[in-house]
Image 1: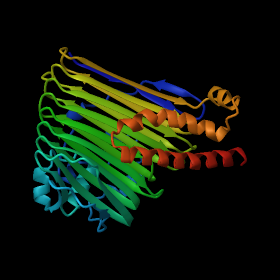
Image 2: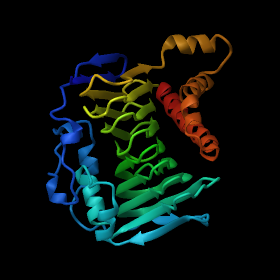
Image 3: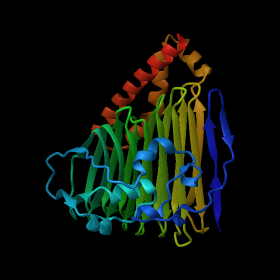
Image 4: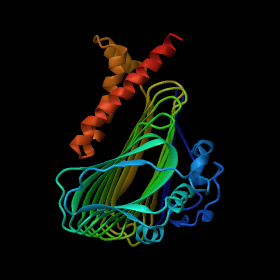
Length: 401
């Protein structure tokens, strides 16, 4: 049995729409992967993978040329059993869990000059999160990172991106048998940054990946995440939080490949938008192959539109090739902060600015708690507060403009 469910939800100035979108031209599993940039044509925006993307703004990270710039890495003293080393280009390709799946990440791998490898030795248990800060200095840069969690290891890794940059990257995540990894990627860029990245993960038997993506900064951010199960009994939980205001385009694409029996996946992404030119895109694909009996999967996307003109596209896809599964489903909804909510809160003496903050806090609160890294959770709520201050200022100016 093969079932494909494809839905699109779009919110504009005054309405929430449920629109039928074209069926994808091919399963994501059949799309090419390669370290050869020439294997991927320069996108035009008409391709399935790029039809929602800000292709013109992403043009600098799609050119097959050496960027020449670098980002500044701030690395703490690493605990015993954890290392961060450099790897040459050939070795980096060999140790990546697979080749890039689009042109931006292929360019990143080709022109990164090698890769950094964050390795957690087998049996290593790390009690505190490993936090690495990557800062852009205005340069055009490429990156290739490998995160390797050895058998029976446990760790939390937080990578924060900030500053200004035009940056493409390719990230490979490899979990050995019974490894547990919390991986948090924070996009806290300045307003002019352009970032295109791909994260590919492979999960060994009984391993556990808890991956969180937070995108608050940048002019254009496009992140693709792919997870492949390589051993039975593994589980992945993918969480995403994004907040776009005027002038920002944020896109997140996900693919979960259930290729072996008895694995579990959960995907939960939430986004908020404010400002007439705010734009977000979420595309979630789950494939349950015929060999993947006993699969349990669910994906959810929610978007909250705070002002007229903002647009959110949400496209969930589910492909099922076996009837012997525990469960499979998805949900997607895009709605706006409406006048009734505002009236209810204002009638109880709450100001308009505070009312908006309360609604957004409640919208994101449960998701923030799911990240599972307390040091990140509190800082993230503070960052959301700053976003809301900026949004409230913009909306107030619009009311009096």
